[in-house]
Amino acid sequence: MRHIYSAIFYIALPFLLLRLWRRGKAAPAYRKRWRERFGLIEKPQGDTPTLWFHTVSVGEFIAARPLIQHYLDTGNYDIVVTTTTPTGSDRVRDVFGDAVFHCYCPYDTPLFVKRFLNKIKPVIFVCLETELWPNIIHFCSQKKIPIIVANARLSEKSARGYAHLRALSSPMLNKISIAAIQNDTDADRFLQLGLKKSSRHVTGSIKFDLKIDDTTRETADALKHAINAERKTLIWIAASTHSGEDEIILHAYTMIRKKHKHVYLILVPRHPERFDQVHKLCVNSGFNTIRRSQNNDQDFDIMVGDTMGELLMLLGVADIAFIGGSLVSNGGHNYIEPAAWGLPIISGPSTYNFLTIANELRDAGALTITPDAQAISQEVIKILENPDRARTQGNAAKQIAEKNRGAMKKLIELIDANIH
Image (cartoon, rainbow, N blue to C red; front, side):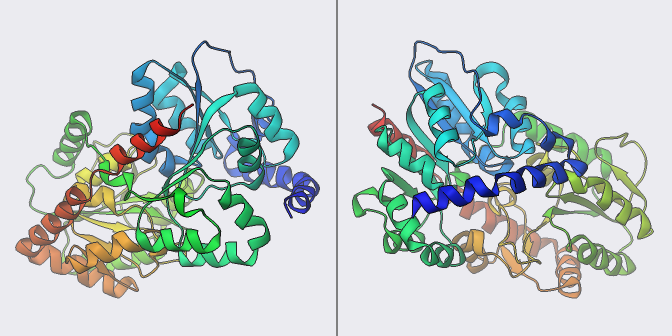
C-alpha cells in the first residue's frame, strides 16, 4: 500500500507545486525555497550526533521550543528543525537563528526522503502531534533511526480517517518507537489503529509546561497600560480566528458596545495572509481600527494583531479570551495559553483538537462554550459586569494549567532513553 501511496504522491507533485504557487499570491514565501521540499539541502556536517525535530507550523514549534532548547543547551548535538509552512519557518529563524539547521520538510516520497536522511544523518526523529508521513517513518525505521511522536494526539475524526486507510496507517504506526500521548482516550485510538503496546506512553500535553518569561510579562503590562491606563474597562481578545469567525466576533462586539462603550477588542487572525482582509473588515464595520505592527499611540476600538510570535504576549494584555477555530469546524486552538495567564475563556463548540483540555477547563468553570454572536456577547457582558466571576473563572483556568505540568520532563526521559 505504501508503494501505491508513493506513486500517487509522485503523480500529485505538479498539483502540489501549483498549490504552493497559488498560496504564494497571498503569502509570497510559499513561492520560495522549493528545493528544500525535494530534499535538496546542504547541511554542514558536524562532529556531534544530529537530532531531527519536525514541527509543522507555528503552534507545534511553540510547543516544541523548550524541548529543542533543552537539547541545544546540552551542547552535545547538532539540531535540525523542519517545518512545512513559511510562518513556522520564520518563527524557527527568529528564535534560534543559526543555532539550529532549519529547512522545509521534504515531500513524502522515497526519493526525497532518502535524499534528505542521507544529508542530515539523524540519530533520532522527533515529530510533533500527528504529523505522520508513511515514507518518512518507513525509511527512518529502515535506517534504525528511533521515531518519537511527541505530544501525540488523535481525535475521533482523525482516527476515522486513519481507519479508512488502515492498510497504510497500521504498518506506519507499528514502526513508531515511542508515542508520548496526551491522554488515555487518544492512546487507545492509537493502539486500535496499530501502535505497539510497548510504544504507548501517556505523558500529558507539553503545552502545559509553558513558561511566561519576564520579558513577555513586561511587554504585556506596558501595552495594557498604554491601552487602558486607568484600568476602568475590559480588554477582550479573540485569538487565532479563522475565515468566517471574524464576522461573528465583530457582530458580538457590536452588541457589547451598545451596552458598554468602553470595551477594547484585540482581534488576532490565525493566518498572516488574512491580516489585511481582517483589518479591512474591521474598518468597514465602522470601528476605529489600528494594527499592532503600526503606531499604537492613537485611540482605537479594535487592534488587529498582525505580528507573528506575539499571541502569548497579547493574551497577557487581555482580561478575557475567545479562542478561535471553534466557531467553524476546525477543532479549536490552544486553550492552555490563556489559562496560563489566568483568563476566563470563551470558545465555540468545535473543540475536538483540544477536547480533553477543553472538557477539563469547562468542568472547572473556566471555559464557556458559546454557539454564536449573541451568546458570545452575553458571556462577555456577564464577565464585564461581574468582576468576582471573572476572577473565579480565571483562577480556575490557572489552576488547571499548573496542575497539568510535567509532560516535558517525561518526554525528555523517553527521548534520552532512545538516542543511540
